[in-house]
Length: 169
Image (tube, rainbow, N blue to C red):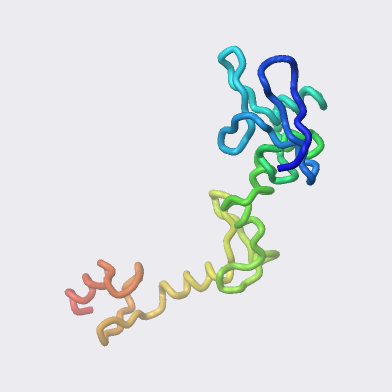
């Protein structure tokens, strides 16, 4: 890494290196990818401290998002104070990936009247949900027999199906 080392304060050697992308990469220790340092028995998170030193306090209820996607970056111009929910949806984790999906696994568009949200806040394809409801009431065939009273159809070896086989219905 070629860059310029910038010393913060007069204490122990703590600082960052400016790289070619404009990131100020923390040169000290890191925890979970984020730059940290310890002073007087307390851990400080480098990007938060740098932001507060150069831009002012982080507003209550907001967190800092790395616009450059580099956790070691402490450049306040690469940081934005946003809500935790917005920060999660900007990321690369499962909630963010699922929120960016435009179609379900069967290719139906996830928008307009074909999109509903369940009680837990999960998005759901209405067309697929309707198909699952209809399929549960269709006659099921297993071992050469047709069963119309098997509501909990889950495949060949479901307990409801085997009860039906034993009863001969």
